[in-house]
Image (cartoon, rainbow, N blue to C red; front, side):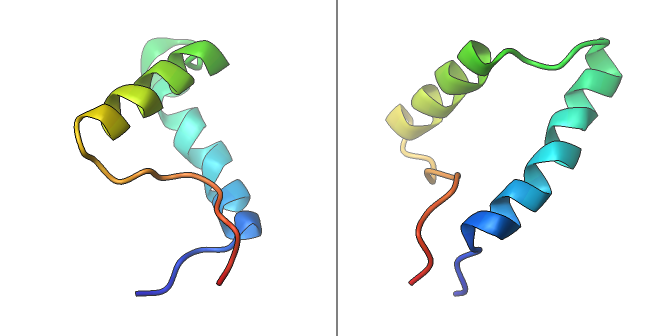
Length: 54
């Protein structure tokens, strides 16, 4: 499996944030994103986000 680079994650982040903003009328706050990330990690989901390239 190939792990995306930090630049690839950054490139993908903006369209991913624009999707809920389009549906909800505003983007989730950084605090809401952090809470969602923490919950996903506690539930055993993959920790997605920028990682150093191997």
